[in-house]
Length: 79
Image 1: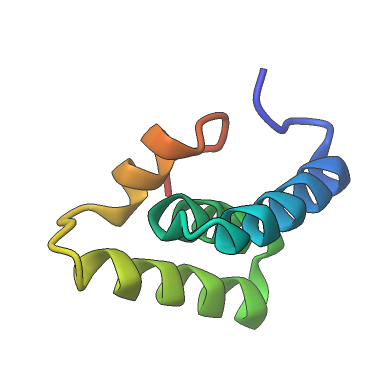
Image 2: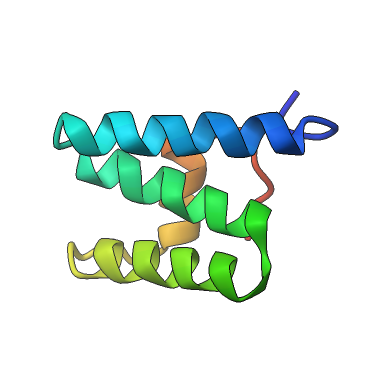
């Protein structure tokens, strides 16, 4: 179903997931969730989150961060 119609709930869920993933050192999953959150938020804040996540993934030799985020945190448009 994805996040269509539930944007606000998705933002809250992603924020909670990021905090939980960071707390247990699941950095790649946290970066993927952060990227999806950035896409939802949009604007400068969203772009900064996407850039941060992309940088993290590229430093780990991930060629296509958008695809990796879609695999790890599905339900969002590929962007």
